[in-house]
Image (cartoon, rainbow, N blue to C red; front, side, top):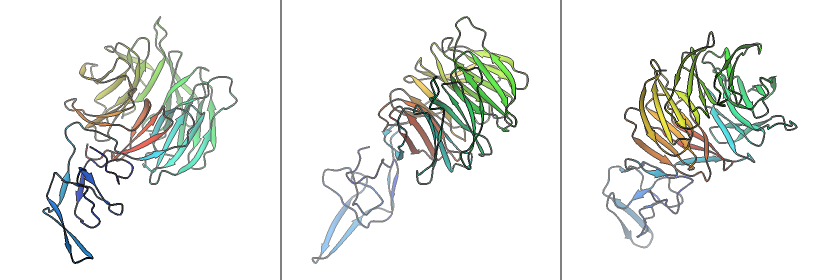
Length: 379
């Protein structure tokens, strides 16, 4: 959809026009509106004409009851309605708070930023270990289920626990002193997981920071853990690896390996459970997304794209979003794997994506150092 000369930041996929005041209809433009108007009008949709009465009165007569401009089956649109700037390096992780009021972002500038979703204002910046001799990039951030805590994992091996209300640092766990690629909270908030580059996953008790289990992938290829995710019931932990291109499913209570999913041919950068826990999505650098049945590990379908950095299910489980190295976000219909929309606007790789809890928004973090918020309700 072509952007109107007066279009605010981002286009509208569907514009409902029920107010005719302030229209401007250039002869050679398909979408247009005057600067003081909130709506768009498509000339091809309905007839409209101007009638001048005297020298001062202009009335728009439109043969409409309500004009609808609808996107086609798989449009490519810059539908972002807000861009958050402030990071000075690659944005590596984004996540919404459980109430949807805050967005947390972790970046290669060693900082975590908390943003107010309603207006995009920066609430506070949390500083990691800037003096670390190792890589202090913040690779992953995760809110606790009650929204009071934020966990972060960094390239220097540090796992930090922050209090969201005031930004104070509550605890630092050094783990295996290797790169922390991914962190996650269990749905009940009692356990946190961290994936490391040295093939291990550590499960920690949130209340006191005690290490509960260390899960290790026994492979001569020494694969790095790139992503971890808890199932909605908290009983299972999924982990994606790089060199082996596998996904392991672990029993959380006793650290037992349940099954290993094979089929990808390159690094599995992201894993995500569907809200009902029956399906697991995996995004890989082999340019595919795979959907797996959790109960038996069978492959349900494969979606083809470019290098996939991040995948996320919508809260209703009907839509899967993917962030890619081609700077785009794609929205897929889970039931049949069809492509619904392609969101463009970033100028570098999209590294992390997250749906808001109510499913109306999507956040994306990119190597272009920005975070974008997208309206995706109705997908």
